[in-house]
Amino acid sequence: MGNPFELQACLRMDKKDIPNPLEIGKKYNFSKNGHRLYQIKVPMDLRDENWNAYGRCVITKYTLGEGKTIGTYVVVKIFDEIQCEQVTRAFVSDEEVDAVLIDIK
Picture 1 (cartoon, rainbow, N blue to C red):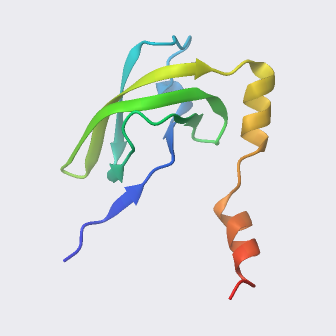
Picture 2: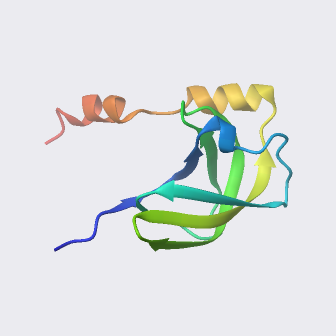
């Protein structure tokens, strides 16, 4: 029997769970359903459930168990309004990737 893990390239949370205002250098806690694997101390996007970008963060620690991933992250960059829009628009969906890869053999 295998263990279902998801490898994560960003920290995505419900908008209501993203602190407002964000503070650079402050530790925040997160909790996600499912077992997720994050790189430690590697900058990644902080995004909401609609893939809107807010800044960059690093995961400093996390634990897995009982169908949950619980951890701590630190904000290392807060996007201004223009950066939020640009990074959000640059998002590539799974459907876009699939459409490109469908003809690759």
